[in-house]
Image (cartoon, rainbow, N blue to C red; front, side, top):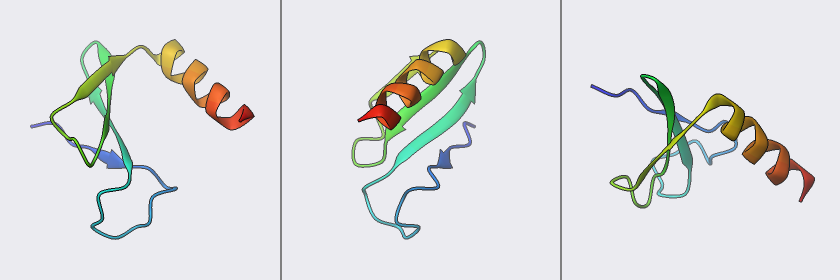
Length: 57
């Protein structure tokens, strides 16, 4: 079973407005809680690039 980790920037409640990350061999998995069936597999380098891009905006 995939164990999802909620973003620390989420509201902390059970709402549907958060990003979740999980480890999936061989990639990482990214999803948004309001549509949990849509899962984006990403590489470590891809996730780092995404986070840097988001941080810059």
